[in-house]
Image (tube, rainbow, N blue to C red):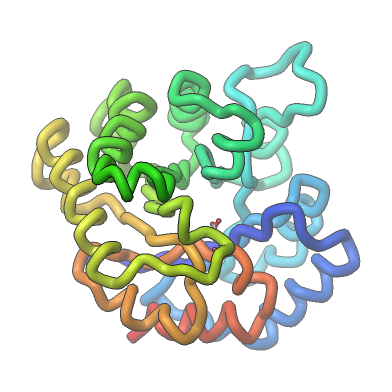
Length: 252
Ligand code: PGA
């Protein structure tokens, strides 16, 4: 049985005081239980505070990115050890905004995924096609290549700490969601790709999240799909009530 995950990707939102306020609200509203794992990914500047505020509360803190090198002359970058040293053990890698605006490539993501594995961090690895890819009916191929190019270097045991997030680029922040059928179809495809490379057992156990305009109103039908194991939530994770409603949808 795969435990569901609801992860909030705050992106470049919330300064320190807003972060404190939102986490306090989350702690008031969210009813943790063992049916769903909850993660939030605030910006780097607020990770330390988030970890401190969530010390005795079952919500995990994740980073939105990290560098592949251990340390060195990489101005503006953050390493795995820096994250680990403040208690952050989870990182989102390959988000489409990073691929598009910051030229993250399969090659750099391959190195980042390897670093996350070496450092024993949980890697929420994002894949997803652009609208033009879907219109050209290349979406299955694109997602397959993203997975192969960045993750297939890794051994079976690495997948204990890998969560895949399918996020069609055309559905992110647009209000446009993949239909539950489109999400299910791609998630099943991802499982098949994993099964071919690593075997059925691994494919059955990896959690695959859907992301892209998930809201309280559509979360239930998306999460009800057999291969959807929860969601990576952008906009709606910035509102404690909406985030909670999505978490509740993942419980049922
Ligand atoms: P959205 O973002 O929910 O605002 O569409 C999802 C994401 O980018 O992870």
